[in-house]
Structure formats: structure tokens, C-alpha cells
Image: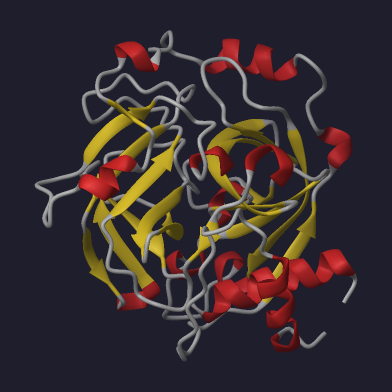
Length: 321
């Protein structure tokens, strides 16, 4: 397959609501390991009706805090519009209305790795494709569990709030870059920590889609969105409510990753970094990893050529090209 030839397919297939799509094309060499690697998810092992509720009961440590009691609230993106030129640390707030576009395209991801549950966040970017972090779809065995390989099943629940979302969509196929599965010697995996999940049915009529900003080094500031589960930033996060953390970009470019002020914690992985660009709210990064000793900052891979080629591959695979 000529993936480069399918870049036009990518541009034609992205259909966010008017005014919410922008693509920036600049020449940039991809990091080593930017080849495509994919894996079919085993839908026969997806959770049956009611099992997610039982899962929640088994894994929640503390009762949830409704956004009305969680402190300042936002639509998730208004803070970007009114943010001062410089922010003194991230501003973290509960999102009052997760059904408001483009936040409506964000949802909670539940994934099973050999029976162990991992929670993440994802964003609808085309009619049947969700963007998330690669470690939410493929475990490299670098954590304490030692698990390695693709998830057994993935469930996406957009606009999740409290106990439920706008519906349940099962993952059908996961796509990552080979540089995430097996980084080239002398390189890191962080530049490849993004994945696309092809889901089992159309979803954009419910959620809309989020526009993407790729092949550039974005300036920020960003509003990072996610469903954090570990308490932090003065909140008793429990994974049941969407939060936005708005902050400045701190570093970028080195090793094809960037760092920004961001107070979200585990469970937010894969959530989008929204940025205001020429009047549009666009996804310019995602929650990847945090420094070991701080919850104040988060890293994101840069959406460079490898990102765009991977999405082109996903869309071509869906159309049979």
C-alpha cells in the first residue's frame, strides 16, 4: 500500500462540524520507528451488558464528587479564550457540560489487558475513529504488572459523566506505530505514544469530531482534557467526571515530544490537548506521560509525519484502499 498516496484520503475523510478542522503541512523528518503496526482486537472478549457497572463497583476507591461540588467549572475550553498571556501553573477545573462541542468528542476508554483494567481517555476524530495514547491500546510491559501486548478489548464511552456516557462503542481494530512497540536503539517510545482505535459503529452523529493540528510545533496554551482517577491538583479525582487543565507549553521539539503545564492524573492518558488556532479549537497533542516526581506537567508526542501517515493508513484500511 502506498500510504503517502492516501494522505489525500485523510484530508477528505475528516468531517468535523464547520469551523473545527485545520491541517498544517510542514516538512519534518519522522522519528525512527514510524512504520505502521496494527492488531485486530478480539471483540468476542468485550464486556457484556452490565459488566462495566460491576467493574466500576469493584475498582472505585472513593465515591465520586459531582462537578457541582468539585470547584470551579468550565465548558472545557472557555479558559483558553480568556487565559492571560502567561499562566502561573495549570488551572484545573471540572467540565460542566461534556456534551458541548468539541468537548462532546471526548470520552472515557476502558481497556482490558489479560483481565487487568486500564482506564484512559480518547477523542473522536472521524466517523469511526478514536484517537488515544498508544499505551492505552498496547502495553509495552514497562509498568509494574509486566503486561505486554494489545488490549483484549476496548470500550469507548463519549461524554461520560457520573455513571454513564452517551453510549457504548467497542473497539474493532487498534493501530500503533512500530516505534511504540519496539523503539529503535538509542530512541525513546514517547514520540510514538499515540494510537487510533477503529470502533464498531459510526459515532460522529452523536459526538461530532475534533479537528487536528499536525506537522507543526504548537505554541499553546493548551486545555488538556481527561478522566483522571488518582487524586491530585486539589481534587479527589475518581475517573467519573471530565476535567480540563489549562496551561502553557514549557518545552518542545526534543525527541519529538513536548511538555506543558497540566494537573491531570492517571486515567487522563490519551485525552486531547485542545488549542485555540485562528478561531478554531483543535487537538494539537495528547496526555502521554508525567515526570515521576510531579503532577504539574505532562508530556505529549508531537503530531508529526508519523502521526499523519498512521491516520492515513487507518482511513485507507477502512475504505479498502
